[in-house]
Length: 253
Image (cartoon, rainbow, N blue to C red; front, side):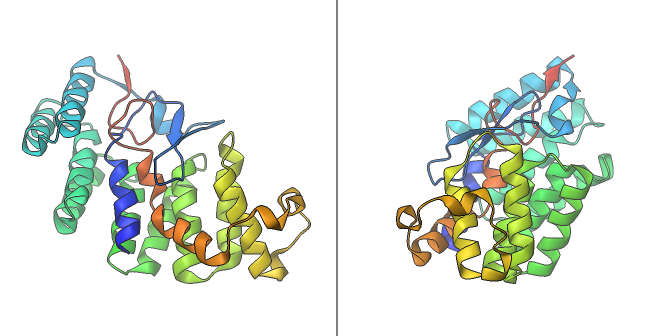
């Protein structure tokens, strides 16, 4: 669990970025994975003043000035009360501090401002998973992906939850393959799919990925460790960086 949380925090290194075309990848080093089609919420045009607040908060966070980052986001909430991005970023900061109750409260505020906002739903899923509420996490991921089918990071989180915690291998395979259809390339997740099919022969449909040599794959235990270490890649690509994907920032209006 600690390994999963550790990767999730990288998410906060990306601050919701609305104009981004790239999402964080699935390695512990937070590689960037090019997406073919980004989720619709990334195209939202935000007021230039809000973008500045979000950028300043991101900068403060990166410099480990956590309280300053929070203060800037509180200002953004006051100045731009009809936008949910500041609350979602506050939730991400609370998440990085393992203050899950505060993170949930911030996400509830964001959803009052904008019902069914996919980044908020995705993060609610992450928090539920960290708290061991796996069926609840699945509900949040399901809702996020139904509302935003192009949301690659949510599909990745959904797949990891299904594989590691729900042992629903059919759902895991579906989610991983959906994720792979939305990104340019992610060899690590491709290997997870191969391993998943190897562990669950009933899922083996003769897909392209099976043609890869099994000798090149890590052992099952190593793959399981990789899955845990980046279980929240969906978050990982979404916070403190304009070149990534959650949605703190957007295109300036």
